[in-house]
Image: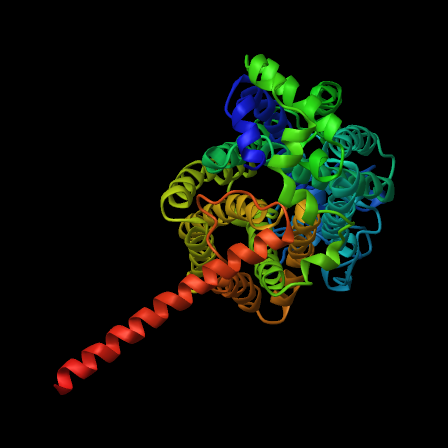
Length: 562
């Protein structure tokens, strides 16, 4: 008898689980909004150098002032970062529109040298009221600051993965989740009212930390209160909350065109989440393993009452709890750190392969998702398309995980995503529809891969170090998200290199996943010993199959000789 039997006794799929999973999954809707917020608050509007200050008193129309001030680039469009040192009046004379040329200066005397936008920029804000780009002039020489802002945010997600992962295993999932909700609410609100770009980045760093705390602890509380048989379905449903969140973000961004109000709108709901999260029950499994049986029993009885099984709940006492988890309790004594993820052979294999899967999934995902303007399509529409593709992708991955297995599903999602990115390298740049379609397919596969990563990782790591493991491997995803913009810069020197790296990484990781064991239909491991024994059994079964095949071959050879 293990913890799963106690969970069945108090009701493993009752009213409590429905409410519990619903309340934990709802905040994930707004996590997508924060994660992809950069696409809208940092959208780069059309811009060009402001006209010379002495032209403001002239009788020129804005179009005429622009014509004599800003040159065209090699594509025939207005140059974004340069203007003429001296207004080119002859450009008006050529069309017969004006004779306002400076008296005493002929066309030949005019200096056509170029200079930077020393009088600032003029922005075309026809489809939005403001962005951080227009407010703080993050263009031209300062254009790299846009990517820095996203890198800093992902740095916060990385720090949060390490910090909240280890603290949750020590202090519990519930208290860390409460702190994460409050941190997201406060940091997001402060970011919305930031008077400068450095302060904005500072508070976005806090949002990134909070996102990791919410994602990691929500998943653990969901998994540790539901039975094995419904983990795939529940995990996929939680993933759909992120998908729906992408569609909600597109809708909110469409109607809220000011970046400050949009940032505030996606942050305020976390105050509500913080308030109702006090109702959440701490993981009884974690409490039992941390030698807190009284609290574990109290939680189990509360769940039994909520599920209408009071009589069954009253039967649970300390003796029953200790007896049912005797092996787990004896093996879980002592403290665990991230080093325990590498102490034993099978834990090392799992950690390395999972880290590769997380890193490449995030690396390729953000290479596609965080620069929507490059597709030449309305960013609100492409956000909807990128969000909608997750629906069929996650349905397919849920079916394959349930009937084929976690390992082949994870591997296939990564390899197919990598192949679509590599194929895009061969498509001419002017065929935007085909390029966008391939990107949508790749993005769907990567979204499916994320679903596999969360569920597969939670099933492979034992309870005593699950949060440490989730924190470590998910931090590799943040590393991938931070590196992705930097890799894109290599395209300035070798145009095809970014696509090759973005596509190659998931393919390599998809092959690495093959070395992981299958977890379909297996109970959650509680201790490291559980993992070692189950993986040894899996490996031994593979050896036995190989031996049986060899024996059959030998028998066949002997028969032929006879």
